Length: 400
Image 1: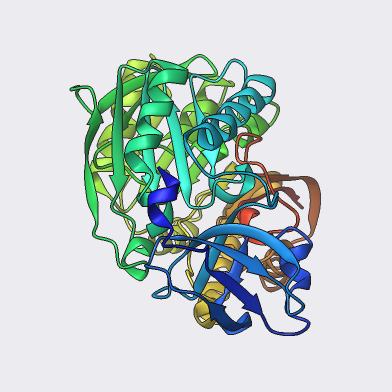
Image 2: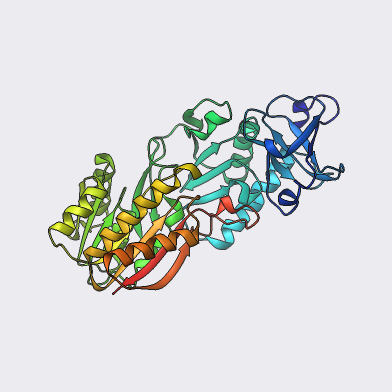
């Protein structure tokens, strides 16, 4: 199939002198600003070779001149063909990794793009159903083949496409959702740590659920017993329900989306925890201020906001947002209480995130002890050569 994408001799993207080091060290992206010249002709999405300034082979990947990321590398083996067998091997390797690190997870990420050496490909599993995202033009051209391979390897009941992510627009791709395989209700249920949840594969956030926080929710096990808990930005209540499961005496969940709050309440009923859980719709920033003004106190506060920035240019505003919610949360905590605070903004790195929380503590007049620093779940592996694959920070503090 891949051979149809190449016209005559395989085009070569030659990098500027000295601009090969990041790619040679393992990063799979080649930026347009790093390129000296392109030898040969190609259409957007075609496969090309990438070579350094001296012509030494660095890798082969798909190219798109419309994107700032000109090439995304698929292989560094000059003899490896990018064909059906290639994708089958890569996906099978990704599945084997999940069998080792998440053997009991009904819902998890099966393919995590660059970290699984399949740039711009996301595959999530919710029980017998899969969700597929092809977020770049080159990967999107293999979509039918990818569905065939996934059906062959996993025999799912259905596959749903969630290609409604705005990053596709930067690749010149349309936004699409719908069934790719099977005919099924996209509202599906699954079990996580003994709790039953529903995920809306068609309309839910991300691919229907925040799978990357699965392991971090277990961090509540020793913090929740007997606690009064506030879960801000609660979405469909996953953190809140885990707190109740682990013995919290009262759980309050707040989210700006009424539909998310309704689903959270339904999850509480579904799991027999409604007597200890209360969810309502409100702007979390405003509600944190209101609760503090009302002198409400909690033993455990959870902050899991959406990404406050999608670009480095917007970082100063994001920093202000993170600082405000953490400061407000600390004022709500009883001395000795615990703060579980998260950031999924890649552009706010770990050190900067911790510095923001420390600045909030100084302004709140509180002292922090770092209990634990966590990251995204193991089914979202981090490729150190590509720091973009490390985006989720989750810090557990005791607030004194």
